[in-house]
Image (cartoon, rainbow, N blue to C red; front, side):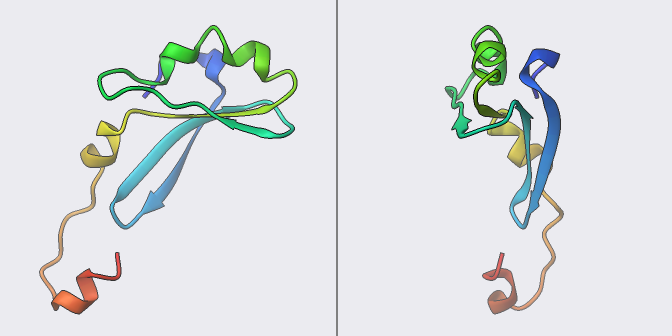
Length: 84
């Protein structure tokens, strides 16, 4: 996850596949910032504070965090697993 407070308040969304963590700041029309595989949202730390004055800026964490926070796999019927 990002280290810079300028990127906003840290939030998370629990999903069946794991937890998606992101930072959000500002208000208005939304902008979602994306980044490459080997970096995190910190690459936008100099851009977000300026744009947050007019827009709601959402900055997802690394995609790796999805896999690190994955819930344990329950061995149940295959149909039940397909719902997540």
